[in-house]
Length: 168
Image (cartoon, rainbow, N blue to C red; front, side, top):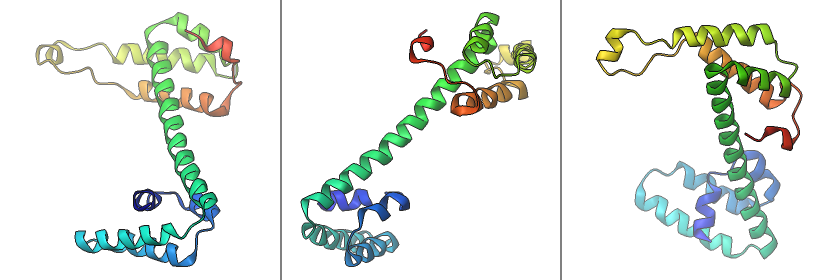
């Protein structure tokens, strides 16, 4: 229960409000956040664990569920970010990917997307000095703008494709 209490210290405020924890426990957790001394924090967390023992099973299950919900949200955000990065790289690499993107997300400005892809390809051409020094190619503004465009569409700015359409 002490470990659960430690985990609850990282819980977002909106999820914490839904738990309806006793004021005494909330005060003890707020105090634990403020304490910087290692031994003081350890003793405060023991106190939090003691207060957690007084909670009923439903409240403890709700706390675990809230922690799981917070963790799932960050995992989904990371997956969304990776998907946008993969699409950006594919769009820069080939015109076929641009055609596929426009089929899946018809709300995208095709002219802007093609111009950004062309510019990103041009910017990605390494110069001889950076190649001889073993430096990674510097990405330009167009590369970042493609990423922003893709993120907007994936986050609901355009039509959402069916799950069967998104296989690679």
